[in-house]
Image (cartoon, rainbow, N blue to C red):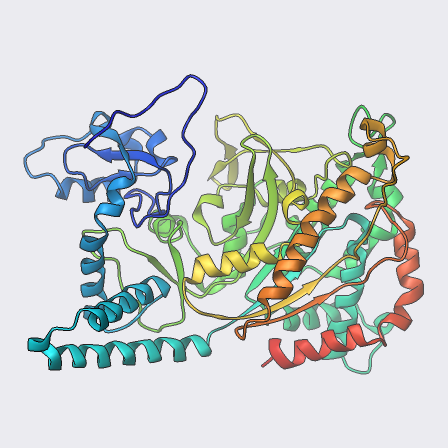
Length: 550
């Protein structure tokens, strides 16, 4: 029985439910309890984000598909989109299951874990509901399905994804730079010492190192380093930021009580300088003013560059249903349905930031079409906007016209440092791989921290504004360390699975050091000669040689 939708002046539904119903416009799984559906055909569905658009502004392909569901209807518009309950999805599972199973049998191949669940469901049904009259036919079916499952797992065994993960940590970002410098020289310039390596030699060696990775993930200062590695900017040049902290971290007179502690203009100028030197293989020179995440996608994937000519079709393929494949032959979407988007394996940059306007986490992803309209300069400045240390960053989407970034008319959104939810973005990277591959993979996680720290709080400390804000950055340090601790507990346990090889390189600091403690650089340099001969660095080097380079 149909029930009226409950409305309230105070409460609005935000419950979520797992269904197989997908948005016909963007392809994303609809997870809200209430969503929009065509009241005539009951086959055209819209997610919460897409339902906000006028019908005529939805994807042309989606509207063309919708027309095929209507034979005599002269025109379709927004008035036919009515709210429905997701309860109906649970009542249609059997019908959808049969359609998907027949599609898998036509392909004669399990493509991903969704297909696998369908096949396993069929096997369970054959086992629990045997038909004596069709016994031989069912046995043949089970044999075929088992063969497909074995083939699926064999392909998964050969599928290796390497992840380079870099933590946030303010000035302690100096630590992963020194570690990576030592490792790159050891692996690709053996016998040399850093002081005798010229920049040209190092950048060639650095490129050999980064070519081994599929994903680059970073938060805050780690986001900047990850970006530099992904775009082959000499990371040794970044050491200047940390060694000249008093210059780049320009103190505001009234900070952090009445404004941010530091003026970000100098670090922002450095970010712009790093972006301005990038040139794509097609000759396009990037600038901080105009370079978008689509440009970075094209830099990372020169053999799969997306030009304006093919932008619309690429946007459809690089949506929420993006699925990376290694197969030489890929299935094409059917003419009359929205299916998974199959894209050849790509290199991906992931950078975290928190959208304070919408109160939602954001994992900027260079292979996700929804993020292409953002400027990379804004993203890098946002991920480094640690509360109380730097001001929030305004970000607007836009379009490129004649190589000029034109922001849209919607008011900009406010972003802050991704460290408040993922100072260690390792779980973010695992999630991204899982969502974009949608199948079994062998993870290789190469993660470098910035030193675990502790700003102890005692019973005598003030628990008011001044106590939290002024005592060595107690508030932000505590928040970021808490997220890192959560990641470490979960990651260290899931790494016990056979398909995950992981190293988390880090040191515990023996005394509290805030994110902006300039003494960190001096202390690390003084002790690095001893540290690099320790078991931690030797294990890091062995892991790289054994699992990343295999």
